[in-house]
Amino acid sequence: MNIRTILFDLDGTLIDTNELIIQSFLHTLETYYPGKYKREDVLPFIGPPLYDTFAALDEARVQEMIATYRAFNHAQHDALVREYETVYETIEALYRNGFRLGVVTTKINATAIMGLKRTKLDPFFHCVVGLDDVKNAKPHPEPILKALELLDSKPEEAIMVGDNYHDILAGKQAGTKTAGVAWTIKGREYLEKYEPDFMLEKMSDLLRIVGVESV
Image (cartoon, rainbow, N blue to C red):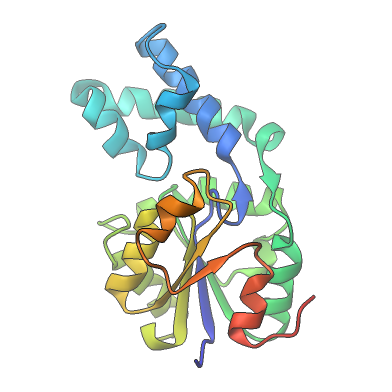
């Protein structure tokens, strides 16, 4: 392989925002549907755009629920966001070895940058493509193709790394290689059903795949 460009999902891949997302959903749902939702009920909501999730519940109050979610999410962001093992060292090594790095997320751009700054990853990324930067969210290939355009790269020299099915499907549809992360909250077996080209046990596994000496 001649991989020179690596695209990453953000939540659940680069940074551990699982607790933040779960608490944000629980807060929002308790506001609008008191006593109806428990922790295990919100796990399927992790990944897709907020609009899709809330529209399925009540299309008339989608924007209101999104605003409630984001207000809580931003207020609690720095307290609840955590790093995953070997992520910082791996991203730094890739950056120093000349790889073009991008984030492709279903979060809005500004919120994604908050997460990168919180974990001090922001200097390493050449582009961030958020939900508000495209018309179609993953699993549509548009966000990946936009990132590749911004990075002056081609699908055949890129790999998409993510923790959810829409990351893998978007990569496949865009023509990139794909890598799933075994630490996905959905479970390794769930992600393997979508047949990523690689499965990472920890982020540093990526270095061997793209030909960089381990950190």
